[in-house]
Image 1 (cartoon, rainbow, N blue to C red):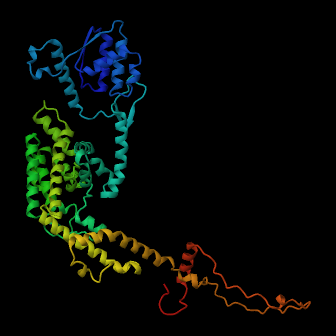
Image 2 (cartoon, rainbow, N blue to C red):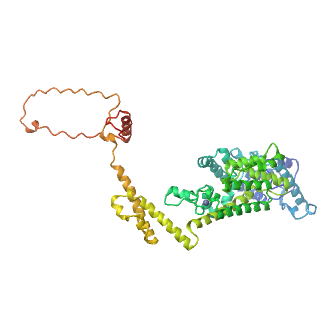
Image 3 (cartoon, rainbow, N blue to C red):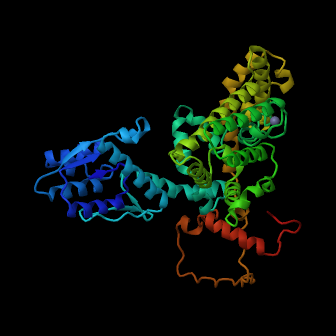
Length: 520
Ligand SMILES: [Zn+2]
């Protein structure tokens, strides 16, 4: 009897039938962890409770229960797997030969039904099974639940951020992206901002505070956006573009990647970097042999829906790995294809190259040597000072003496002194401006506070009737009875903002009382 480590869970039932009809004395298995676990199950009564959440628990538990059926427990031995890699098959001992045979059968089985088994059968001894979106989860349950929940939140975010439909979000190979992101943990701050197009470029900073320069530091293009950073056609950027794409091509060719995929990648990246549309006609001939499926056309369509800008930012379609897997099976059937590792080979070095470009750009923006740094710093100080003087009219009158007569007069001083002045006065000026704004609105009352508008349809003339003269009954002698107290000044009725807004609305509908323009 032989077990293979790659045996899919659903096929263990074959093992069940086999054990029912024959009586094995010795069992060989190439998975040392599995042997250890099963022997622990025999040794410790609570072992199977303790490892209830371990990977493939259902398989291990079922094997244990089957072995218990025998009156005499068979001996389980370990055999090293893939021994035919170094020693010829015929020279191997029988257990190793059987292991190689089992591996081959197993691989053929997997290849016949690649990735089709989502819902594995429930073993007779398994009481429960975790299903997430119809897919059985047999390992890393907590991680799988977390990931599933994360992907559920991703859809609405991507829709809001980039307008992606659920299909487009689902077509991205997020596992490959996550693997590359995790491997760049040291640079995670940069990578996150880069991938989500949140790098603080000139355009972004200028939008937040106008004192920052929004131009590209090398080509002086009016808006340095996250895309312009990579699409800039200055000679230094062109050099970076060609180095990055050629390094990617070299890596992929070294890893025996499908040449058509490499060409599509290069064409796609160039179309983004040069901001030109992608030309599919170059690749139409490769689809002829796969007609009418046209897999390369499908790949390009999927990646274009995601965007080539997002290709650079690590978001690749699932189609890339599927086509590469096909290619590996056709050209090198013995090679095991690891899609996450292949994607990491593409994404990770691109992240590094983009970070290098960001460093170069920062040098260009803030200066690399002492001299350029000083002059760029002086330019920024000047912009900061001009920004503060621009709000001079908006601060409280009491704080206006902080400023000099003109900004140009102030700029004649030393850069260091100006910088100190900005540092010490900036917060005061901003606070004064806020306070001035607050005060300017606190004493403002809406017009209806003074003029109560009449409601429409109720503009009847009041009928003034004189009250009847009271008939005096007796004549008082007290002075207070002859001098009535002075009438109180009419108090305005306090009204809520909602009531006032309602009054204003009605007021606007009335014919204009005061003539001329609308009172508002
Ligand atoms: Zn530029």
